[in-house]
Figure 1 (spheres, rainbow, N blue to C red):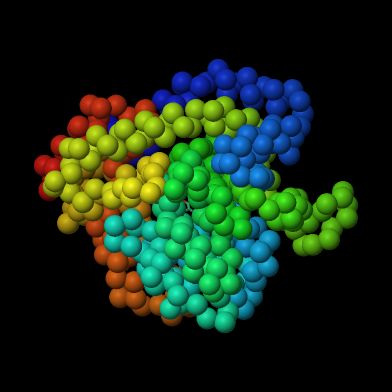
Figure 2: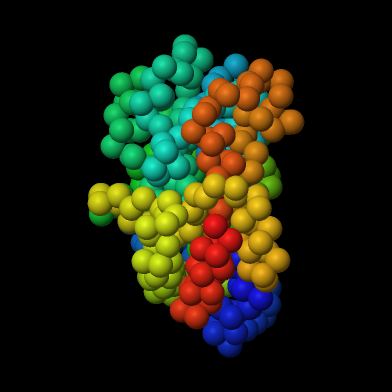
Length: 363
Ligand SMILES: *Cc1c(COP(=O)(O)O)cnc(C)c1O
C-alpha cells in the first residue's frame, strides 16, 4: 500500500519534540492564545518575510475573517477560481458577498488573469488568487489588474506554505493572505488550524479583534467578532514542524522531479515556471480515461486521488448562482483529467517508481 499522504512516518520522526511541546502547554495551563501561539505567530511571520501573522481556527476561517476585515459583505462580488477547494468560495459566501468564478490556465491550473478584467463590475471588491497545488499564481498580473480596477487582493495560500514567486514568499502580496494547517497540508497541525499574514499593522489589529469576539479590551466589543483562534497545543506542534518545513518541501520537490523524470514523455506532468517555485502540496498529472486509471491504481494499492472532481460553479450549493456546464472549459476539462499521485516528504524512491510504473501500465 502506498498512501496519497502518510502522516505517520513524519510523526515518528519528531515524536519526542512534539511530546515536549505538548507537555509544556499542558503544564502552562495557557490553552488558548498563550505564549506558544504568540511565538508561533512571530516565527511564521519571520519565515514568510511578512510583518505580521495571527493564528486562527482554520484556513476557511482565515479566508472569512480576511474578507470581513477588508469590508466585504452583502452586495459585493469577489472573484474566485472555479478550480480550487470549496473553502475559497465559502469564505466569500459567509460574508454575504457573491463568489464570481473565473477559469484557470491550462498549464499552471491557476487563475487565468486574462479573463479577470472581463468579470469586473461595479460590485467587484476583491480577487482571491489561489496558489493551487503549491505553485504561486501569476502575482504580477493579478496585482496589476487589481491595482488598475481598485480591487483588494486576498491570497489563498492554504496549499503553498513556503512557495516563492520571484524570490518573495507567497502570502506577502495581498492585503492579507490565508494559510491552513489541516493535517495533510505542507505545514500541518494535529487538528484544525489556520493563520492570516499581512504587512499592514492596521489590518492585523482589526484581525486580532475579529478572531477574539471583536474585543480589543476585555469585555469591550467594538465589532461583531468571531471565536476563531489557533489553540496553544496546535501552535506547539506547528513550531516543531515549521523548523523542518523547508527541508520537507525540498524532499517534496525531489519526489516530484523523480516522478517527472519517469513520466515526462508519456504523461502531462506539472508545468514549472521559471519565475516561481513549487512546493508540491499536490503532484497533479493529466491523463485520458482518468477514472479508469484511478481505479486501476487504487486497485493496485496506490492511494491516488483527484483535486477536484467537481468544479465550484457546478456544485449543488452554488446552483443558485446560475452557472452551467461549459462556462469554464479549462476547469471542466481538468476536472475530468487530473490525477494526484502520492506525495509526501518521506515517500521513498522505490514507491515513486512503483506508482509511476503502475500508472504507465494502466495507460
Ligand atoms: C485546505 C484549503 C482551504 C481550507 O483550509 P481548512 O483549514 O481545511 O479550513 C482553503 N483553500 C484551499 C485552497 C485549501 O486547500
